[in-house]
Length: 476
View 1 (cartoon, rainbow, N blue to C red):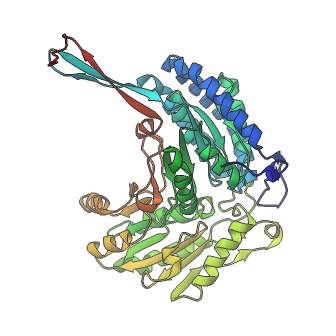
View 2: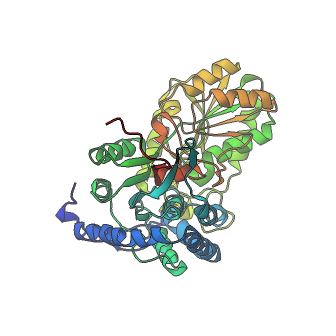
């Protein structure tokens, strides 16, 4: 596919969702510029791959050090562009990206194949080789972290990457490219292109792109997979979810409430792995709802640059309208509104896209608010009676990204986790994603894994080599 010529003069104008202020004007990448970027990446990739792996690791490690040194500055930029509270971006977004770069800096020198003994007459070995030029397509909820999650393993393996951030949040990817250059990454090995869906489609379909890694919605994932199919390109898809959080009656109620709040209200609910279906065993359901409502009422909603703010605005007016639409529809369904449910417009909030943290209680799983991904600060609590029932209900969804279990019975915790259709799970915790652990989903929630040693499989190809040690025994 080619970009439309009419898009060549388009401008991206990212805004501050807390104020509506335009933060920058960025030219959209034109068709010729995309071709040139891919050509630069192709020319640079061979020399980058030819470096000793430990040398590639040193560049990544230096980039990690620069990210940490610039944490405050980059966190502020991320907050201005996403609306996420500064207390989050300073503690998680930048530093988790640095952790990822540091991890793969260490992994780079360990990437290796196998030696295989084939008897006295031969042996075999395998080589792990880079794919070439790969594409990363980011989401708007964790712009810098996602860019690092994709770039770090790709670069460690010797690939070059063309990265397209989400059009709503393009700013910190530019900063990351500058940091890579400062760290010594050769020109062309990591490049950022800017644009909307048509640019993403052109990037996926480009004949010199060997692999695509997307973080996005399920419909976008299906479109990317279809666009990659004619070229038989490898894809990694980290998509959406409607994840279950299961709380058994023996769980510590306050700890479980903490988990549910992290699983629904962090980043104003804009987290793909959020546990938005909170199943609570009936003996503690009333106590759980009382504690949850009381703590939710104390959340501080406001200016995301204020260190005391816990809930910021949604990323855009369009996202706010989408979430409010889900809430309005839920109010017509057979569910009970426990807390929240409004757009907040008091005082300075009037200029931003703020939605009150919202809790519904549902008697069963039939309502749309229970089934559909909302991607906002909206939690649905459901009662359950026994283990077999809740496992069946938890798995009754097209999604399979994440799941959580809260219980003091660790035997039950492991038993339940083993039966849940989810790629990323937590026991007595939620939404903690150390880079050492692979992250990703099953079913409609994606293909492949980010992070951990598993990501190396997605950025390398295996070459098998047979080595004969004796003359050929030829029957001809």
